[in-house]
Length: 392
Image (cartoon, rainbow, N blue to C red; front, side):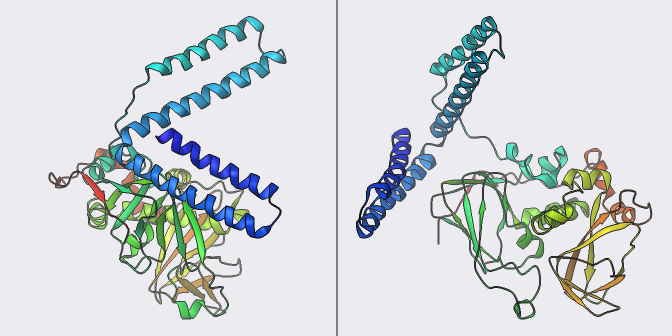
């Protein structure tokens, strides 16, 4: 059923392409297009239902199909290299036998594969840094969340329930331009109010910023396909902040700050090679916090870039305001926070001074020893199972 339905979806796509080529009247084409699109949507919903009810069978089928695709491509590349004399004929024959044996072995492939447990996916959360003590903590609390095609994961204006790490499937986020912690009346003077659309797939996380701030969600997330996610509730996340204070919350801010900086200023930062691991291990960049009316001096020797990634600041000398996201100009020597909370990503010069960024990083340096420290957190024995929420 699953394979036939997938083939049917593909056939509707092909039919739409062919009808557009042969149709002589736009009205007829539009009518046929609507019929084909409706058929496709119904089939996609059916696929979602099958994936939800028979997940172990679908996982096995998708795994088998992925192996077939990889081996088929390998056979094609092998044939090409043999035809060009890149691979010796005898060696090519032997390699061909090995690849064909892989395809034959698929006849004995299991018909069902049980889905992985939540802890298997926690290694994909970058701010957990693959540290066993952190993964063990959240493994006790994480749950699997299942959503069908068209389900709403979270709505704009709602308070966050927690974070969702997408394991499989795709969600689409619809929102106004992000506020970055700035009041809308302040930012709306010259900014476009057009809707933003963003797609989230495997490995992406929904809800991090809203959970950090404990503020309303700024977007509506809807499932474009059947979706599975690893869910960590807001309560459990903040329990983790308390247990692993202060570095865990800082690491999430660092990840979000890097993401914002690279999204908006990639061309300016292309030579920096910024990654989360590089920032943590080599102190290439760090996040600083400014509250309202607090000041910060910019050291031009040690600070190569200072980027406002959340909130707003003002140049204390010229009184020029800077709203997130923006890179502060080199002429800026001292700034003052003008939002309740402002976050700045400071990218250090190639040879940072020991007494600048290290002061900020010293407060979270305990993260390097987190694996060696004992944390007597209370384990939750009754909170196992799945978290499932239908669309509103």
